[in-house]
Image (cartoon, rainbow, N blue to C red):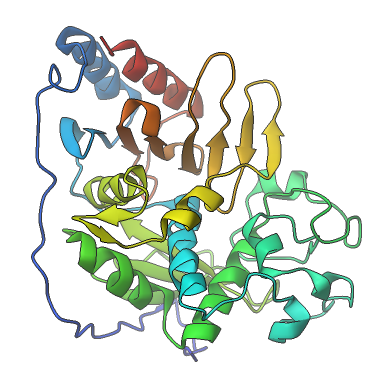
Length: 355
């Protein structure tokens, strides 16, 4: 699929979505007591949220909302949680036979701007990219300072030899998906996920952004391709979603990819993508699967949980052992004073509220 390469400040390329409409439904509600949570403890959580700089927090037990605080219907950019959204699309199109995770970059004709990929780098497979173990350390769009600080030198590792949280892998996966399907990632998410789940706010509208223009502002759309063409030909693909729609996505994964009796994402893919392939924090047993972070079972926790954060302050957490989905949001598109440590405190307050 080709997209315009003409940039002013922000070039809007809004697509007209003409898919069959399905009912948009809100998650049902239950009381905190029914969910096994203490009301007084949740009030302490609420007081903390009011002073923390949070925008929204939504807690869902077994598919029903029992704590709804803040602007849960307002769309914010979700930052790196975009990777977890991409994972489900890969699961769907792998099962359909459209994508082969054993295909190499060479098989797919993938290269990048100078300095282009080496023959060894081109031996990385789609599975290596999904696990962020490609061994390709080319420049990429939307890379944070933290990512740059830990970035290995080109050629340091062979494919699947080393984990590095790598935006080149993630951005290129978006391109491969679009190349193989012939559709925009935002249309695909609308068709395959948002419509079947009856999401309230996601409509699949998207635009383009010149990430190298310091004056460029994030457009008010559901998706944004961020290009930084001096670094890479592959754009980052940002999503803007509400806490409520993200919670629905979390419930989908809590239910092993099923929604209202229909298998949306293959159960085998949900399991495979939330299995750890790289130990990223040995002290608390956190690993990385295929576009999901994984809380590995240990003496403190008997069951696996999985999550993805965004900019260190947004979070979508799925805790199957507790039948819990948590969505935390911050308005990072505007001025905010939320500090990452506060997210850890919020998580502690949530689990301290369980009866």
